Length: 211
Image (cartoon, rainbow, N blue to C red; front, side, top):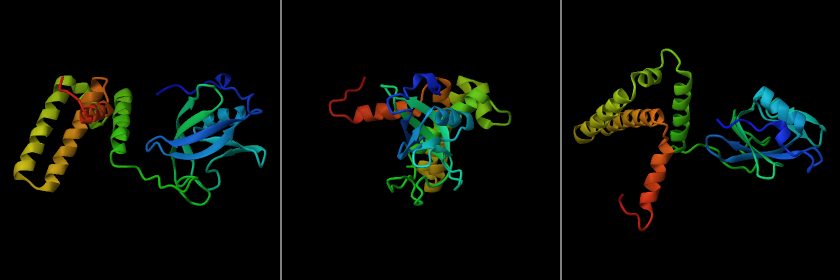
């Protein structure tokens, strides 16, 4: 993960001590809300791990969700090129808007099925970094590249068998095993599933030629 910006890097002077903070869902990438932070609010955001703003109307700090319980758990903070605006990637624990809507623009924030691939990749990356005992993913990393590659081949074959002689349900089940083991293998090699998707997108462009 990219380190959060140090408070000293942020130019609070342009906005009379405040900077706009755009909150984006870390998984779906949908913009959830806009608030303002002063230095104290930013420090509290990092300390608590929950998005904390400065309320201009009440003239005080407030942690989003402190009343409703719909907190915004901070995943990453990015500073813009002028050092006077923040992008906060967060995990929402419920609707964000006070109206009960998912976002302050009344949009639905349901994740797409494809966005889960990124979430799964991030989870597997965490497993690789932490290597918790009792985890099947941990055991695959410990077994090494050769074993991971073997598992990808085995699951691919089982997917083919179910496609030819099995049911649709079993085909999806085995394809899921195949995709999971493929992502583990990619992770072990320092690659991501998004790179595979990017390659497919490149092939879809007019004029693409096979390497």
